[in-house]
Length: 168
Image 1 (cartoon, one colour):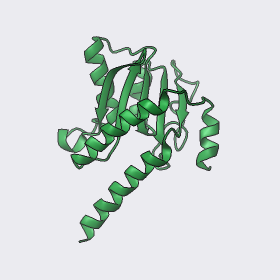
Image 2 (cartoon, rainbow, N blue to C red):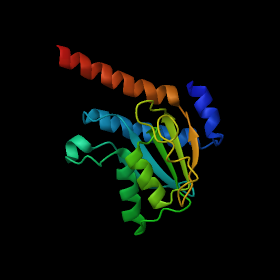
Image 3 (cartoon, helix red, strand yellow):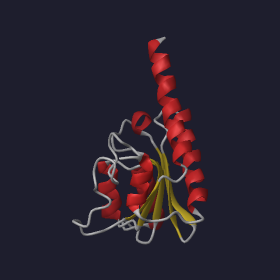
């Protein structure tokens, strides 16, 4: 399925503030890249305020669950002293994986906005339909493809440079 078809399938149109918050997530992704982590960033927003943020950290934290989304959810939970993040929107530069999708649902995040689609492991329609299913006890509104080219290029360039270093 073409990326524009997938974006149309998600249904929710981007809001005016989506690009602003995705740029914030991109800044966090660049921090991950500087730490030689896969450049993915996430920011959790409620009432137009940051309640949590994260960047990929599995390598530096020695933690396979330290994806940007999980780090942002944990940060928000600590700040709000609540594991339920009702009425919050999560902005993430890459379509969430199955693990992150489960945590997003458990936290009751209202909406997820992501940049690049993940044709190898995305759980918002690319590979799995976890975030978009009505089979679970919580549904998440989805908007995909916000600043997709910029988010995708950041990832592509990272992996291109990593392969080049490995081969030299």
